Length: 199
Image 1 (tube, rainbow, N blue to C red):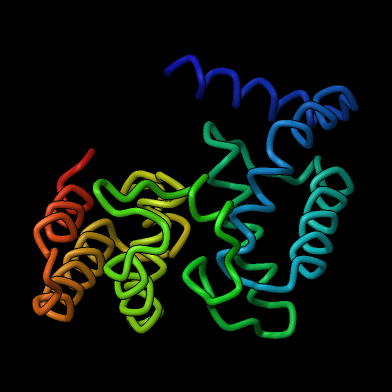
Image 2 (image 1 turned 60 degrees about the vertical axis):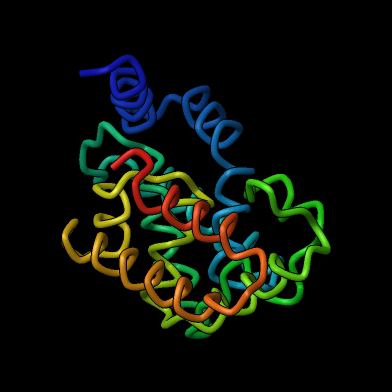
């Protein structure tokens, strides 16, 4: 068991035992991360905040019934995803909507050799937004939230192989759609980097 897993395990056990300091630590550690993650599924920031508050309220209220976990982040991500999608049956919007701010995009995703305002980057955003929801979700969870294939499989409730297929298909589609872009080399290199990094 790695150091992070070990820390998560004992923090979770303290929470289950009713340790309010552990609850506060959990909230302070993950609230902002969850808010950023939640906006992958809803553009309504108030809905995301409400779901996060409900999630933490339920965590403490039903703490004695919580199952053990070595990965709190995954547990919280999965729980929040379900809660947001259940709330008003929100359709995936993900970060590539027109409403994403420039600062949010720059802080969350790095595009090698592609700069804000670059026509190619705008084209890339448009094409990603048009991907099927499952492909788009897998792609963004992998490279916006920097989750492993195993983590994504758990959150999306699909197999690791299905995660890989969704990401592969999304990259293949993007390469085809962007084949006419003049400066396609940097985009294709980016997409290959996305496909092979940390596999």
